[in-house]
Length: 179
Image 1: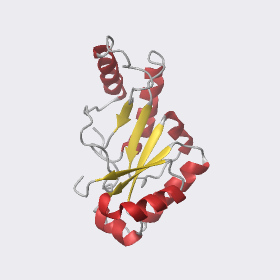
Image 2: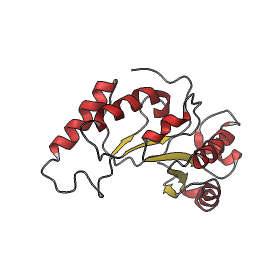
Image 3: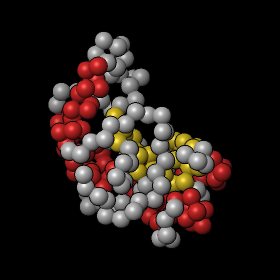
């Protein structure tokens, strides 16, 4: 398992979703294949009601591992054409290849709050410029036509939702403050 380059800010995602710890492209492929093989007799296992495969943080922001994720998605799509893929990210990631994000059907960015001071409090990080980086990630993603969703904390929900929509989010998810 590879460590991410720096401690990442808090990333919001539903804790109820099942997760599998993977360390390689092969592990990702095997986990997805196993999931869909177990559900082969379940009507709707792949289709409109399928939430798909979401990459969640375990050892840093998933986008730090974009090359491996993209490679695994390409391999999986050879046999599983209709599987949607999504990622939960802090939005504080320097990407060399932003076009690589096109492999995701959905990207949920943890905006957390609506201003830099509240973001610092909520994120657990110490770099003041991170709030601007998250906002910039959202603006650039919207300009590229990416399907962006945003996660905000309940105590900042009203202002956070307003900012998220102004920055191009298609949907806003509100999480409990202890999420």
